[in-house]
Length: 471
Ligand code: SAH
Ligand code: SF4
Ligand code: F3S
View 1 (cartoon, rainbow, N blue to C red):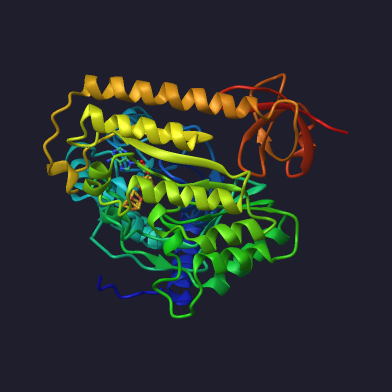
View 2: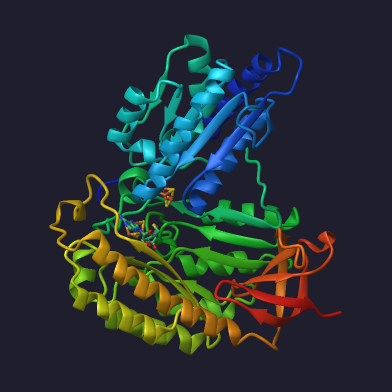
């Protein structure tokens, strides 16, 4: 695929920061701190992008709020992966009519994957006049410039031109997940699975340079982050567009070798590119979690072929067996689509069989959602929604039974847990993750957030473990 790698210069970002400083004078002119609300949908990549939005907003002098009436600027960072995600966004944008009426000076911006689709940008233009600013993922790096353009010209701004994407470094960023940090290693996707919109809205695969990633990871560790997740739509393609010979396994080892106490995670791996070298590296790197999220999508070879996944069910199972040989305590999770166009009930049975064979620790299951412009959207789709729902419910019941059994297997054991946040459960106000990514609820002081503790597991459900800190 012809793609020209474009790395934006530091000067380009510096120019945006200069605009942000100008806007700071504008927004703080009334002497009070302006407030922004950033609402994020979709995957971790979008969470990471929202940190960039907050970084720029902070440079413009903004504080942050969750109250849409209090916000001077609202930015909604959207997802396009399924219709449900888009409906939620449109519903919430519609609801902002109230806040906009109460305070006409409010600036509403919609960005992210949904608006990168031409029909959605059109829809916002025609039917949502309260929205002042619309920009796709490729334009996020120049958010200050777009905002200034709207403020000075008082005309709605739409920045959604098609693009293969660029690489930007050195943008400001406000992280809010301490002790957890997202670290993008690559952007875009070249796989074009036939159901998926991501390659259309996120552009071509492009990798950040390893030395830049390692420097950022080192800085995160120095700042006290304890849980670093390397992000990409398909991390196993990392480095293919670089000339330095570093692949994802090499990168994993480079980050693992940074001194300090932290857990190293990564998402997502495409099965076709998951290699023996990756499994060996995961086993050898002591900070790397023993968890692999390896989306299978379906268990039937004809369906997998139609999906353009580029592996058979058997090839997938062989990879799992190999991974488990290197990492016997490997936690496996997956994504599955039910009701891909033309998938028969018999073909769906193959998915159930594969799930029983693998015994995933957790599964993310979705009913197929047609995405405009993708190849699958044009395929005949004879099963009704109700028939798909029956299959979906069967899969979910199976997934839940296996997860519950796997979780029950932890009860009585003592595991190492990173305490990473709070929950609303009064009896167990802290949350944490085991080194292989299992959610744990437990009691203890808030001051423990960010520390590793040994936890005796005392109970379990389908979704989580419960435990007590050993002292
Ligand atoms: N890059 C990741 C997945 C990104 S999307 C990967 O390839 O693993 C996350 C999940 O959403 C996918 O794994 C798939 O299961 C699901 N998904 C994507 N497009 C979908 C669609 N059109 N309908 C239903 N589910 C979809
Ligand atoms: Fe979508 Fe497939 Fe790319 Fe994942 S690998 S983002 S499912 S096209
Ligand atoms: Fe959604 Fe875009 Fe992520 S479509 S899943 S937010 S890459």
